Image (cartoon, rainbow, N blue to C red; front, side):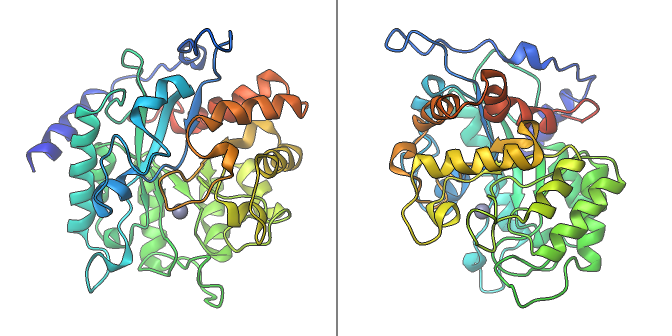
Length: 350
Ligand SMILES: [Zn+2]
C-alpha cells in the first residue's frame, strides 16, 4: 500500500485554495514548423489506458498505439481522464474492491514514471499532461463510504457508477429491459461522491439511472457529465443520449464528451471524421458549444474513424470543425476548455 499512501499525501498536499485560471492553461506546446500554427489544447474525458495496462498486458506508455505517451505533446494533449476500469470477469464474483485498488496502484505508479504525465489533479505542474482518475463501474464501492473517500483523496474525480451490465449501484444502457435505475446504494454513492467533489458520469447508465443522476446533480447544483457518449438523434444506439437527456445535462452546466467509436457514431456503417464533426455540430446546436467536449474512448478496444486512428487525429478534428464553420473560440471550448471547466471548478479538492 506504500504507493497509495504516497498518493494520498500528494493529493492532500494540493487541497489548498484552487485558483485556476483557464486562460493560464492555454499557452500551448508549439506543434512545429510543418504547420506553422499551434495545436489546440486537448483534454480527453475517457482514455482506457488503465485497462490496457492492467488487463491486456500492454505498457502504459504505448497501449495499443492509439494514445502513445510519446505522441501527446505533439498532439496538443494537456489533460486526460483515466478510468480505473475492471472487467466483469476479473474474478468469478465480478469486480472486487481489491481489483479497483490494484488498478489504482498500477496506474499511479505508471503516471509517476511516465512522461509527460503528471500526478492526478488540477494544479498545473510545469506543463505535461494533467490527469484525473475515474470509475467506469463502481459496484465494489457500494456501501463503502470510507473507501470512496479514500479514492477521492487520491485523485479519483469522475464517478461512473456502472458499465455494460447492471451492478450493485445502477442499471446499465446495456440492459435495456431493466426498468429500475439507481439502487438505494447507488443513490447513497452518488450523494457521497458529489459531496467529495466528484463529478457524476452518466455514460453507460440506463435511461432511468441517467435521469436520476442528472436530477441529483441538478438538486446539488453541480455539473453532471457524459464522458463518452454521442447523440441518439444521429445514431440510434442505447449508449447514446436523447435530446432531453442532453438538455438536462447542459442545464447542470455539464458536458458531453463525443466518442470516436464507430458503432456509436454511425451504427452499421464504418464511421468517418465527418460523422464526428456531425455529432459535435449537432450537440453544439442542441445544447450549445459550451457543453460539448471529447471522450474519444481511445485504448478501449474502440474502432475510431481512419482519420482519427490515434491522438494525431485531435488536431485533424479541430481543423475539420473550423472548416465546418465553427469559430476558433468554440473549437477551443470543445477541445479542452469545457472539460476543464467541469473537472477543475473552483472549490474542488484537487
Ligand atoms: Zn465505456
